[in-house]
Length: 83
Image (cartoon, rainbow, N blue to C red; front, side):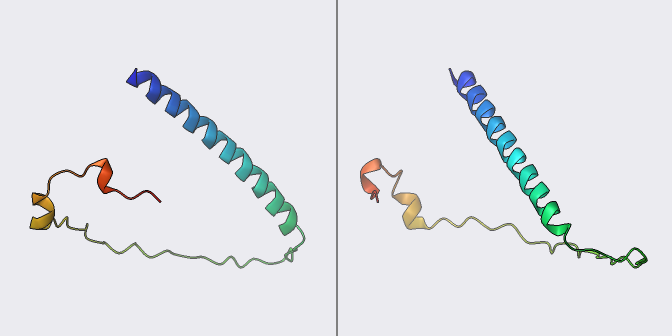
């Protein structure tokens, strides 16, 4: 049934995300190990700060349907070229 398919897809996605998280954790540990080579003086008190700019608002794209395309009807499988 459709519910079983969706449940299986969700389970598969969850497993994939867990594997990705584990890989990222491993890579983060490796990065920390590499970065431990660099030392910062213990008397350093200056901390740089960064303030990100707010993202510019972008208008949603408008859907434009040509009259020719709307009159042709639905496409069928034979009209597509397989690569």
